[in-house]
Length: 405
Image 1 (spheres, rainbow, N blue to C red):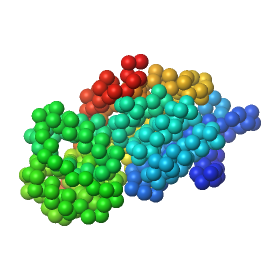
Image 2 (cartoon, rainbow, N blue to C red; image 1 turned 45 degrees about the vertical axis):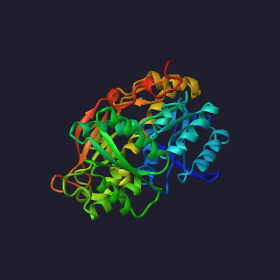
Image 3 (cartoon, helix red, strand yellow; image 1 turned 90 degrees about the vertical axis):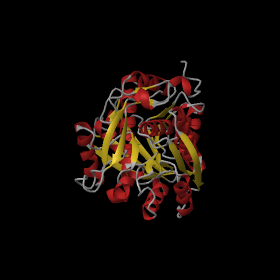
Image 4 (tube, one colour; image 1 turned 180 degrees about the vertical axis):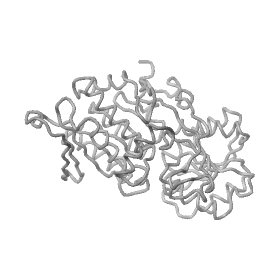
């Protein structure tokens, strides 16, 4: 039986999960991990408390203890600000004895935390953050990138659409680190596959009115209008595209370079139908994804996003590595995490590379029409499973100094 307790430490809520056992086991120093995420802002639906719950599920699966030590889960809201996220990470590492931090969702926060974790010889695992810089020149021997990245999203979506004749593109891009990286990766891959980028309109985070950006995209004549944004920005942009009839004539197609299940659900199949996308996980992909997702749904009353499923996978793999290493020493745990394949409902024979990239299959999909959708969460039609080595950037192309190790 797993006991749960909540307490406040330095402004961060701490959820302790410890299985009943001998008094000796309870007296041992706990293994502490943290989920640092967006609990109140733009990305709280695809990540947020759902990611915390997914981590909790992974801890419960191992019985709440590893090596006879209780596993404790801390959670905190970084508010999508790198300085706040960095401050929480330092406190967790220096004061609270946290050995690994997961999720992060914001690219800027993930980069900041990965640097701190490297300096303090602790582990950081980005599950919701997107930037491919995490495994490029900014790579870290203790940093990992689990679910997806801007390269894999752009590569899978761009390559498939160029193959289908979508050889001219226009971007509507979020004007910060994530959006820039997504557009840059997509542009390189579009051009490498014989396509051409006709232009881009950049918008600040939290923009409410996308009319001018959509008009520019429509007037460009590009065959593909690609949204290099996410969260509520993407939802607002797509909703307004439908209101203005962008793509309604069939001459232009809409592509989301980053969309999560929660956003597709909020938009609905009427607004999002026909939208092309790439995901790292879909709840209705096979029997294994359906079985785990049902357990998640019973707890959250929502199907899991790829960020949430990936957080479960990463936490589970970390705890398995601690058990296999016989210690929570960072160096030995990282060795085991790289040595052991990732086999769960999220990844089949996934592998953690020296640059920190966890390579697994990606899913190129399209949002179903209202007539095709049979239930409220029946949203995607998977068009192609993209093998991991084809989806992610080759190890030797990112500029990571660890690539040759």
